[in-house]
Image 1 (tube, rainbow over the protein chains, first blue to last red):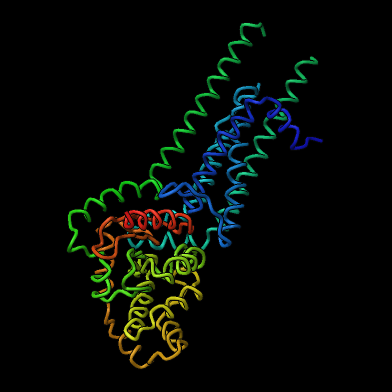
Image 2 (cartoon, chains in turn purple, red):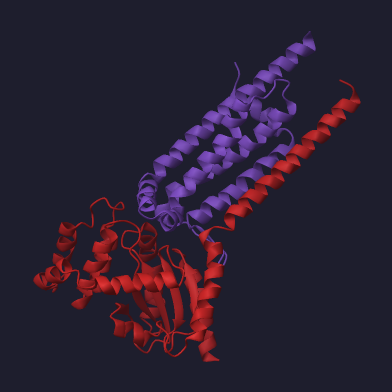
Amino acid sequence: MISLPLSFKVVFSTPMYILTAAAGAIPFWILFNVFDQLIFFEPIWIFYLPEDAIIGFILTTIVSILLGILASMNIYAIGHSRLKISRKSLFSGSSLSIISGVCSSCSSVGFLLISTFGSIGVITTNLLTIYQIPIRIISVAILIFALYYIHKRIVQSCIMDLRKDYM
Amino acid sequence: MNNGNILQGQNRMRAKLLSTIVVMTGLIFGILSFSPNILSLNHSASAMAQTDNSIGSSPFSLSNLIEQGSPYLGNLTAPITIIDFSDFQCHLCARHVKNAEPIINETYIQTGKIALVFKHLPNRGFDSMGAHLAAQCANEQGKFWQFYKVLYEKQKGIDSGWVNKVNLKMFASQISELEVKQFNTCFEAQRHKEFIDSDIRLANSQGFFDTPSFIIVNSIDGSNLEIIRGAQPFPAFQSVIEKKLDELKN
């Protein structure tokens, strides 16, 4: 039976990919928390987590970690797989994860929408604010799906590599 | 596969990894540069320039603000004033009221070191204006801060109906010693519409479109302006206030 940790073991046995995952996750984590007003750079550098932001913070942290892992696994798949990585795979991996990740923070950039789009911006902001948590849960779900997809690709290519070696 | 090919493949891989890291870092910092906190640096600088040129007739001196009819808390002789631009429907404003404001109140307002002035910036939804009109009507009877507290305690989703006319009147009726008939007349007539519009114009002239936003000034002439954007925690306010208090001492 193929298990998810197998692809993890394969990819993250190389420190370079752990570094890539961290390089992907940390900037997104910072970005999301800036949009959520949990990290401030002015007048002082500060991070704080009020009670009302805990659920959102947990979800954006999960999204950031998943984004990092996905980015790293995608790069591994492109570099190592003997299977030709299709555009579909790339879409399901990096692109979807970035879109869903950015979406998870857009509820807190409402003022930009309001100032740019007026009334339509107000309506959009309201919807994004009201459905902030569900949007983030959907983001996590999309990322997990993308992770499963890329995992399958990596494991499949490993099996093909093994078969080729035995032939 | 020969060794040369393997090496070539590895080099290509490394190049890909490196370029991905560079692109991602660039992307993140690019987006960060458009974030509200970073933007505040530019606004802060332009706002300062505007205010420094108009010392003496500054719209931000405590006496001017009170004369205009803005609700305030604290001692009139307080050397520093915080001007709070907020929207009653904004959840980040509620976060500020729940977290940082009580500590600011206890540490600085109650001790006479700062005064807090409220400015209306209703921009979070279509029902926001009604809430601010009602709050300013409560201010007519000296009940602004009680009404403010009720609104932030009862806050629900933007434009979900929690600040419709019926609810606003009900909230007003819950405030002790508030003359409901007088409140309703003021509210129905939208008596303070022009006042709130002028607050919005003032906010926009300072580059404020998001709430909460704060201006911290010397009370006497509205000078030495500093801006804090967002629902920042108490230490952020403390750093600015303490710096200003030190400057005033020297």
